[in-house]
Length: 333
Image (tube, rainbow, N blue to C red; front, side):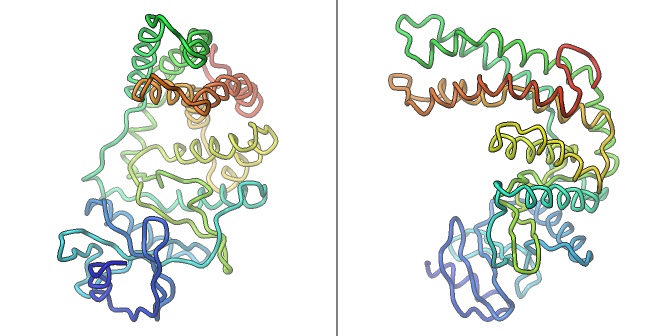
């Protein structure tokens, strides 16, 4: 730990008893409990929304999160002498949610639903760029075509290139269909409704950001908070869990039920989640990584990731048909 870190801590109304470095931060034992000091790549609007979320959760008896701590001047960002900004937040002794334990996964889905019900701030409109998923998928699909054009012109093709060309047509067909279905869906309407309500999302809700503490489950790391359709958090959580559980249909249905028991989803929101799950995200990532890397040597790990992205596509298709009654080649859910 450097002198600048100590200097920053002195600007907070706390007594620091011990510090140690952890991944990307400094863990502090203080007279007010555990706290985490991090360098801030955060805008003021984001900090303000994080604080609003923390206040809303604090007002609920059974909800806890990593609350921001103001410095002696009442500010959430503290600048060191070398010009680096920091923020301090409450932390908890605990472990990450165990993705192997179904009970913890289902409690995490319920927790997300509870948090979503609190994350509406119509007055916080400035400083956030809203996503355009149709435009994003259109861009991804152009990139897939560019990689395909590049590879097919290569004289010598390795295992990665050969497998990519073999499955490109089928995977691109799915990608293009998702783009079109999304554009024809209620997506724009959902975005407008979200905008009117002032809905925010966690932005990275996964088992790494859920702590199992002695006094209950805690959601942390709201640094990726943004304005979006709230089911985007559920899509991301569901995808991360299902990838670990080989798209287990029973668990997937239970996750959806657990969330909907607290915060029911409309049919158009379910269609949105199904469309996002349908998109061959991993296949695109493999292609994008390949195109932007040293193509003279392709690691076996890259080949394996490509293979898995292709294999999971059929499993995912069956999952979506079973859980969402969703068929990509038909309109509606």
